[in-house]
Amino acid sequence: MKSEQLFRNILSKKSFLCIGLDTEKEKLPEHLKHDAQGIFKFNKEIIDATHDLVIAYKPNIAFYEAEGTAGWDALEKTVAYIRRKSTDILIIADAKRGDIGNTSRMYAKTFFEKFNFDALTVAPYMGEDSIKPFLEFEDKWTIILALTSNKGADDFQYYYDSFNHQYLFERVLNLSKDWGTPDNMMYVVGATQAQKLLEIRKNVPDHFLLIPGVGAQGGSLHDVAAFGMNNQCGLIVNSSRAIIYADNSRKFAKAARAVATEMQEEMQLLLENYF
Image (cartoon, rainbow, N blue to C red; front, side, top):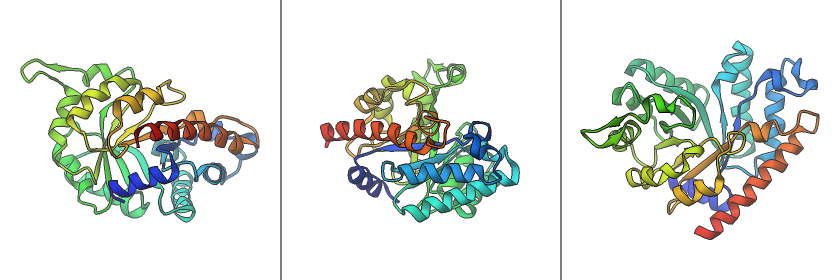
């Protein structure tokens, strides 16, 4: 799926919403908590209730790894189920991988070939040779961490290089933007850093940005659109906990759809203002 197809999907669904499937066993509704297939059954109901409202799903791999082989099985079934529901939904592995070349190549094979994900988040701090193996896979997306929302982002990402007059996150953007293209590379930018999107767009005007932090983390969808939208929308906005844990009863999927619908309707208005 190239950027043009992604943009067509956004216009068709009037949405640039991604739902994070951060499915934690301890937070499942009581009737699923002790079910051996509980994680997959939970995901399946969320997908059934929301697939027409989203352009992407983003399982956070840590929540599946924590359950061992049962978690990996649930992850594989989840990806396969999304494929059966729609061929136009981008499936993102939120794994934040990155290592020396041979190791990165194995990570890429795991997520792109074994699990058939469309995209994978990666950490760039080991440099170009740790990222290139991911970019070698045709029709797959590599999503590089650029500027995150967590408190610890100040520790390194805002380190200022007075000689080159740039922050470390800006150096990441400037050095990496030519490793791939806007058709196979995106960047992660936290929604709580919305005003920084103006500076980021100066460096990467054409790339899609994956924006976590709207919803439970308090990021503003309006600000993200105002500062970050480009001529192909260029945004995939993720919400996880605010949607999937909107309710803890047997009606959890209905509640998830209600929250997702609110976000989709706000996105529709924003898209109508821009396109």
